[in-house]
Image (cartoon, rainbow, N blue to C red; front, side, top):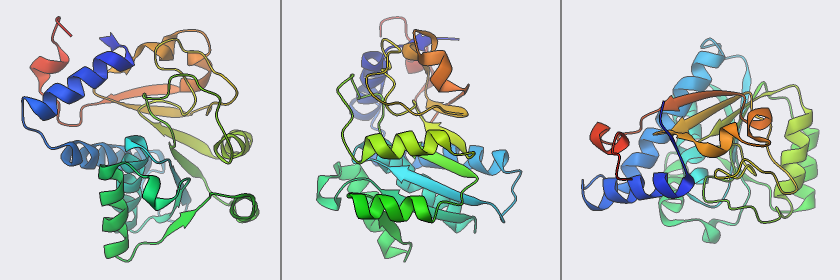
Amino acid sequence: MRIVTPQQIRQIDNIAIGIYGIASVTLMENAGSVVADVVRETLSHKRDEKICVLCGKGNNGGDGLVTGRHLLKSRFKTDTFLLAKPQELASDARFNLELMKSENYKVNAITNSNEFNRFIKNFKYSIVVDAILGTGYSGASISEPLKSVISFVNKTMAKIISIDIPSGLNGLSGKVRNAAVKSTITVTLGLAKRGFYLNAGPAHSGRVIVRNIGFPRELLNSKTI
């Protein structure tokens, strides 16, 4: 199994988009689709369990928005939460937020203490999809409300499925600064990340499932990246 750094996977992503002509929004759609498949499999396709999708402002959050949309289309009981203001979203993530709205799917907010307290009060989820921070996270101190949300979901009995990497885990070093999701399953995109196997990585990554999201095979196998 090939293991890469965050820099290497970004290079693969950039080449797939810039040279192979694969649209970034297509990669995001594929990512959300494969994660939704893993959620369905984890629940054994039972639609009476509740799912919570937590989305940050970057591309990882965009993957989460796609995951939420696919689960709702499959009629799973899914609540999607955005931990940022809409204007803060990366372009592809914003596109998927608008797509959710256009299909009349509600996106809730957790951007302040009142919304966080409401989230805690109403928490009855069997699955939490972690799409807060991706491999672009490089070790900075995690601010509120993200820190409190991560701390809370780690203490629940819900199974946590992280998209690409557990939020707060450094994909290069496997170190944790002040908060990181403790995943039950990490659905990592394209290739496994180095940080899963170093320092705090094994304690936070859970079972790692590698899924391709449309990257050309020769790109994933390249020895020059």
